[in-house]
Amino acid sequence: MKKIIYLVVASCLVLMNVSAKRVAKGRSVKKSAKTVRTVSATSAAPMIHLKMSDRVLSGKEKMAVDAYMIAFESYNEKKYKTALSKLTYADNLLGKPTARTSYLEAKICYEQGDYVAARTACAAYFAASPRHDSGYDEMTSISSSLNAYFAQKATQMQAEAKQRQAEQEAAEQAQKEAAQKQQAAIQAAAVRRQQAAAEDAAKLKAQQDAFAAARAANTKDAYMQFIYAYPYGKFRPDAEKEMAVKWPSPKRQLKKNLYGYVDAKGKFVVKAKYDYASEFVEDRGRVGRDGKYGFVDADGKEVIPLVYKSAANFSYGLSAVKDDAGNAYFLQKDGSRLGDKSYKDAKPFSESLAAVADDYFKYGYISTDGTVVIPNAFDVAGSFHEGFAAVGKSENGSVKYGYINANGEQLTDFIYEDARDFQMGAARVKVGDKYGLIDRFGSPITCCDYDYITDFRSDGYARARRANIDVLLDTDGTPWTNVNGYMIQVKFKTN
Image (cartoon, rainbow, N blue to C red; front, side, top):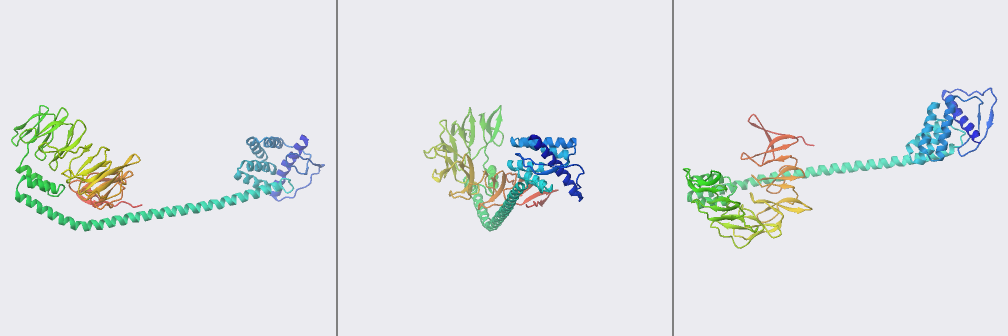
């Protein structure tokens, strides 16, 4: 029986290969002069009734038949990899795929779910014109199934492509709308800044009049009240310079690695006996020795003893100190406490307000008489500058920052990774890993697309970098570069 199967397969492989070649050339097939015989056989492999020449098979043809038989047996044993390898080998020996090898390859690939290879094998099968092959109907069924699968796949891919395109268009539209909204916000903020410019002019006139009044009074207290009223005003530097001339304070001096203070003639008015000393602020010099801090007056008297773990320079007549027990509170210039309230932390006064922390280390703000002005609700609190303070709240282990005004009202939401003090009407903020500027209305002056922005200098410019280009940024958000002494505006490409 095995011999019969072998003969049938051999004749099938050889005759189909020969027949395909002859049909392809358009020649008629002549009957062999030799005696022909009919071989009929059935087996697990699809067999056909055919006439086979008695001619002797060539060496390659015999090897192809052997390879096919091994492939067929491997298929029955579900050794698909071996079967496919042998089928490829048989095709290479015969010079092209035959109906038999293509049939078996199609079945293997179809059963393995490799539908692309199965479709290719089906196409090769039908290209061999197996008109009387008993596997023809099976291949037709498999081919129809594959065509239906790929048609469905194509429809699905078209639908997915259409959905991706729709999503992309929606994303682009959303991005465009967001950019337009941000640009509109920037333009609206620019209009508000123009309106505020008129208000600033009026405030500047009031500040100028107040400075003129302090000069007319010509007292140290009058000058100090002016500075308290306009801590970041245009005329504060002038007031401080005039005070230094009219009422000079002792200057810090180092002698034999110890600090003291000297008068205008260089004479020590406070002996050099301190490990640390600051310049005089509000008639008091902050001094330290052996890790403890206190204050001296212009005569060298220790008006506040060196008993504090930390102490800040006087501001608005008050100094924030902390004792060895970790209690923070405020001292007046004579060393007396401001009320009896203690805090976990206390920061210097700025614009008449100081940040203080309660027992839960939540920060709020008090006035110079110790009254709570802004409740303790923040995890981080900065000093007030130009009417606003940067404050932070902890969210999921990280701090997000925003701004409040002197009444505790929010200027912005808590959306920034970093927020710096206001300078000249602008504040630096960070979103993600990029920096930008906002105005005193909480609106963006620039988008957050700078790698860094420094403090604003006295000339009104801050150094910044965007798109690997270093620029000078003004408080209106306009980037400039200095070329041979001329300021040239920088135009960045927009995406």
